[in-house]
Amino acid sequence: MATEFKTNPFAAPTNDPQANARAMPFHRNNYLWMIIGVVTILVGFLIMSMDKEEFGFGFLGLTLGPIIVVAGYIIEFYAILQKPKA
Image (cartoon, rainbow, N blue to C red; front, side, top):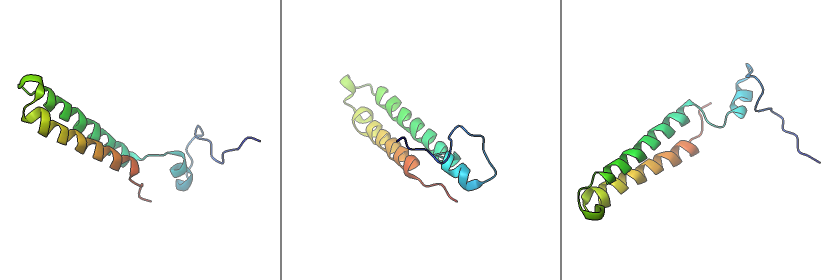
């Protein structure tokens, strides 16, 4: 027998804040942190591409860029795992 969901994700929003909280997996704050994380990752890759050493073996390509990319991924994990405030 098929499992029925109690809330329809395609239903119109209601005045019940708990029903709206169940319908949306992320909130505005989560999306803002996700955008910040993506921009940080892109900046890290841009920094790695700016390295003038052969094959990117300079400071920008081997140290600074990867650190910024890892920081961007940490921001992304935080954005996904952050619980919305009630």
